[in-house]
Image 1 (cartoon, rainbow, N blue to C red):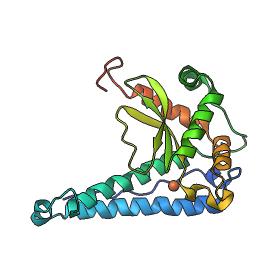
Image 2 (cartoon, helix red, strand yellow):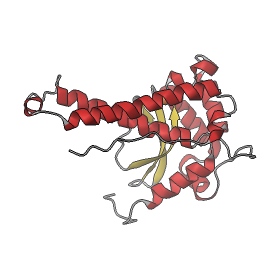
Image 3 (cartoon, rainbow, N blue to C red):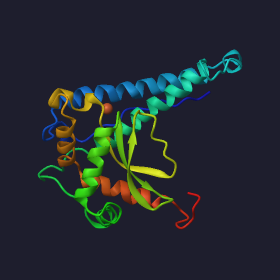
Image 4 (cartoon, helix red, strand yellow):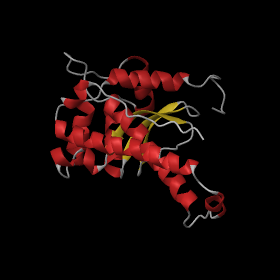
Length: 216
Ligand code: FE
């Protein structure tokens, strides 16, 4: 069986000079990301080697199949969530940051009333989450929504494509903020590269090829 290994993404240098999120935090956080990549490859390899005996022993309480399939989605979530998180943090060289504009701002105003309320909703969702907040485009409802995720693999909200990912695990902020998650979320918003998020939004909106259907 041909199992392709995934490799870690490289991110912009601006990730290492954020306002209020230290280089040390990012370096440690990237080690965790690398760990998810490694484990994803390791689990895939093990799945490719499952024996007839392993398949016959499949069981919902405990079995090798259950363990590998559960942890595969956890590792994959850890990879994809962090790639989105790191990709939209850090401003372009020589700029002091941006705010959403154009179609994305219009959609935010439409679905949340204002940018301020969007941020308030995302922050409160982040304080309430045990892992992640994803602002996602719900293609059935045609709206943006801040979804709450308690784990790396609770991202499977059908018809919802994430455009912004906020990591609320303690490792994302404890070195710099201790238990002050609220302070971390405020600074997270200040460091966002909205141009990257606008690209994610545009891709999400245009990913359905049959625009007005209710099946995609
Ligand atoms: Fe993380």
